[in-house]
Image (cartoon, rainbow, N blue to C red; front, side, top):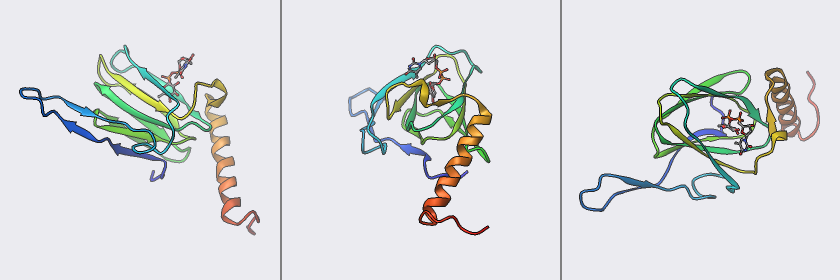
Length: 156
Ligand code: T46
């Protein structure tokens, strides 16, 4: 899967200059490290190891996911292909555009996944039925085809 709107983003990180401190500060600046305006931040925490979440896609929402503690596997599918991202560094975020079915696995107890999102919570933006998701992806491909042909449908 080589989709342009799914990628790992290296977050600017300041190594501690404080004597005897080994910690670092990583920074997420809206409009710089993620290509959308951040309207909401939420975090997933308290999950057990191997707990599975997700099983949905978003119609319009953009997200940037940062594992603040522990690790998560995020499996993304565009309906044709899927790819697994292991998120285990608070120095990196996973950018996810609209239209990806996701499955999220908590890899270790005490893990915390922060998600910066482009809009407030709206259940209407969720697709929670896989067949509906496939139909949505098909409609996206149709729209893309139309825009590439300048609105004229090409001959088969
Ligand atoms: C996503 C993954 C990474 C709210 O009321 N407000 C919120 O801002 C959110 C995020 C959720 N909720 C409610 C909706 C459900 O009744 O919390 C409940 C659990 O949500 P959900 O089953 O969607 O949880 P996850 O962990 O499967 O998915 C969440 C996000 O919902 C989703 O956008 O991409 O984290």
